[in-house]
Image 1 (cartoon, each protein chain N blue to C red):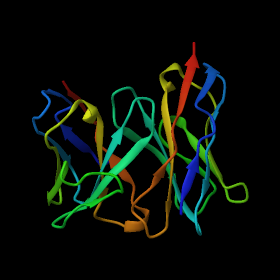
Image 2 (cartoon, one colour):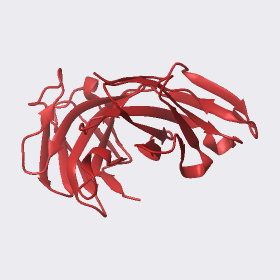
Image 3 (cartoon, each protein chain N blue to C red):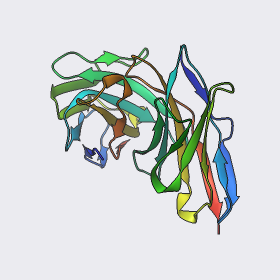
Image 4 (cartoon, rainbow over the protein chains, first blue to last red):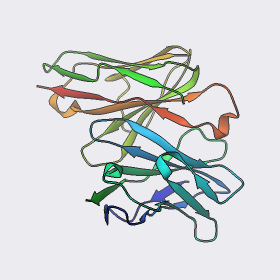
Length: 113
Length: 119
């Protein structure tokens, strides 16, 4: 069985400061990991994914995530937050061979001017 | 990147009527499409998975006779909410996986969602 946890309902950060949105997962074997962002009344937009290779994955809008196998984590990061980054962020995990991901409950990121 | 569209973006209907939502992959062929339901400030709940030309696979607790899914082509899937009631009001999102590439690594691309309000 696969599962993913986003331990924070909300993350607050000042504009210009680095941000981290946390995600931990549980799967059998090696995971496929994804981050999506959702703006109000919109669908999810793909940010980045980890399949294999480099543990540091770079994605859209300056976001990156680091795959840490020993800690079973895939935290989303950005060096300098923008107010426009304020949105709902979802982490998702998928077992190899499966098309169906499991989504975390989402973390609301609020970037203050 | 791959684009998925949904139509309509918003629909208001009377209780007892049926509503059809379309999901299209615009620039790629989708082997598999997914239908999700999202409640306010909550995560996505997978309703069903549909493959082109075959019956949809519904998640436990989802009424297949109420939420009819048709995946008629590699670019179109439809969700029909039959005899809608106020409790069916929700945000419905579809997603699609591209046919090309290595299936197990393919990314899901999401539509913009449809806000259904049943009066």
